[in-house]
Image (tube, rainbow, N blue to C red; front, side, top):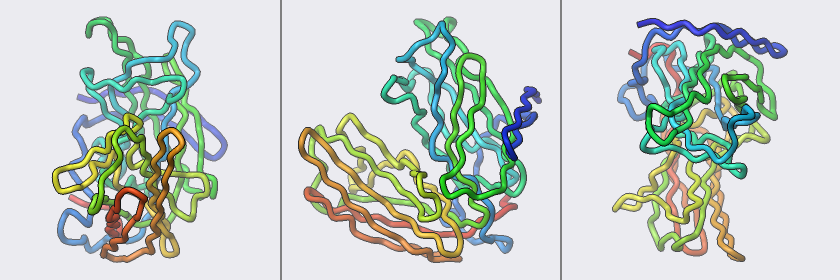
Length: 296
């Protein structure tokens, strides 16, 4: 069933226009590196790097904290299916607070291609006492088709039903895909110690991709030490781009920080480096691949 939501907003060179929502299916494709043979058309391509989405300027009848569920998804020319950036069910809401009004992103599951305009679809609700009392927070669809790279990235605000959505992102005109994996191999994470795992590229000064933010002090790991990251796919400028992965821990007067840098290995390859913190060692692996426009 097709639904059309009319949204046309212009801001400088950026144009946000009507998008027709034809498919509600999730993008079935993952990063090329993890899906077998590299397609013949795989090349460095123009991609969108999403750093954050902030919920701000609430209507007068709303105030933080709010329990929010729903999704934000991108649709690009690879398959036009939903590539989820944020997705929460009603029984797993995120609580937005004055200190943290940002959606906790868990995607994209692969690079967001910017060869053609990218559709952004937003459906967010505020949880009520029962499902019938849930209220719409944001219901919006628009296209993004900026093609210029700016060192400080791009910020733009989209008005919605009961709030403003502030996107922070970067346009990378020539980029490749990096998939990050982290595993604890020696020692352990301290109990009740909040942590932050982020990565950044040398081409965007202010932009950071949050791989995992665990302010509850519990590092989510599997039995083999593999860290369960919220995000793991990053776009990196070709050919001179470098990726830096940082691990930060802080509790009371204690703090520790480790960083590892990665150079690019394309058309396909991976590099593993050790991030040595005071209390544990982590192996950080980055796998590189080119980007395909026509994966099927």
